[in-house]
Length: 332
Image (cartoon, rainbow, N blue to C red; front, side):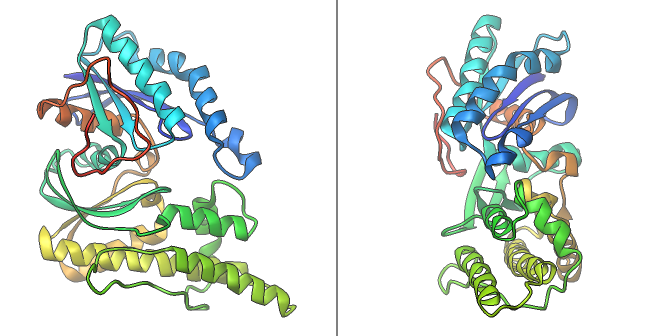
């Protein structure tokens, strides 16, 4: 089965043709980073307009003359205006071609990027999903059967990276720039907080570490001292990545002994190295998505879309976009 997949949840417009949820036939992505860079972050209205400008030509390239068997599209979560561009285009195309329309939850798509990286991977497994807007630990019992074990109570990990990058004057996108600077610093130079919840051991909180970074910068400046940016970036990265790795591996130990990493922050080399080290020590099998599939892309939506279709999840022309929705039992 060949699925045309469309992704437009934030600042990448993407379209892909994926066969049977495992093989990428085409994968087209247009990034909006140059557009939003001057603003220091994504401007929702500008993002929506940019999606409109390129989606038709991008889909045409992705189809490469093929007629798909179905159309899959990201409908939640994300920027509502951006999502609506992809959803409305997908609805129109599916109607015109008289093909099934398959709604896909964005976070499930990130997990499915691992099906493309590891064709042998099948559930059950535990997944750590870390992105600009989400930080979850979930148990994936089957392709469409998710159970949240823990999640952030405030800032997502990627959001914290972006805010710290802004404080350090590194610009947008922040995550890769903080990581590049962290490589040059000492991760133990500054001790930043790691939050624990007594009755929710797999929940996260990254607001405190972000505030601690801001306070450290202010105190250093007020004291007239030179700010050691590389040490700060390294210490912040260590505080975030170590708590992510520790909690995710513990959850995998208690549930499936297999851990899948997913989401935009899965490209972070510090996090990948930590998980590799901890999983090796704990005897947990680790799956890391290919770097090219860590960010938002449509191939991952096509991979998950195939399994949503097998589960009977098919929408009609009334499909809407939703800015937020649980990954456990998404409705449409």
